[in-house]
Image (cartoon, rainbow, N blue to C red; front, side):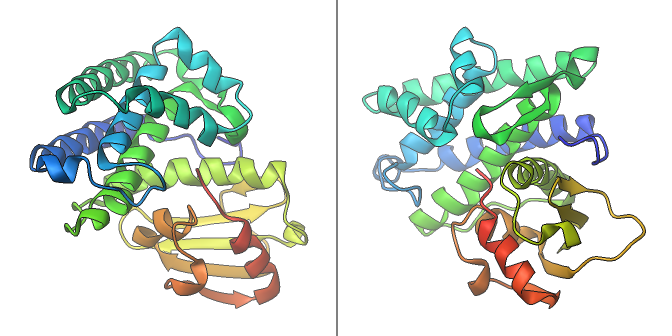
Length: 267
């Protein structure tokens, strides 16, 4: 996370992770075997593969194999390999790893966030460096929230599980941190003039984005202001849908805002 952003609320991040794990267990426990093996909205992945991915991600935070993710060139490619290795696993085996790895990652987070190690900045593939406690909590909360509500439930024709302001705040904390790093690594032309991003509703807030990344709002002007419901950001902000087809409002320099929005793709 950029030092220009306020520190993450780690107790809330930890609570959000526990809540999202419980939500996932509740959702998967009600699936039929046909639903378990049905295609998800994540390209090439079944529902089973999505759960296996989250379990493998949680495991990577406390196993030596996780070092590969740190130095990978592409996080999406690194995500494919563990899923491929688990495709033949039984439902029981996938769920056992998901539960075990989730417990251990949550325990690790609870220990780390109370120590100076929480602030140690660790790289995560092309997503840049993040404080360790934020990386563990943010990546897992984001994965749970986004996969469950945008890749699993809709693909099965089931209603998206509910969320709340605290969990959304955790999701957005991670997404803005990643977005800030992405923008800093590949600046959008004209972004030195700054764009304000306001996400309304549960967990929402306002952030400024410039060529160096994300920062908390302060005195001064912005060239454009983007406003959207917070609940929609995990969908269009990951390019699962187009921001142009979403409830996104732009004022000010619309061309600059469009260039910025076209570049938003949090992974």
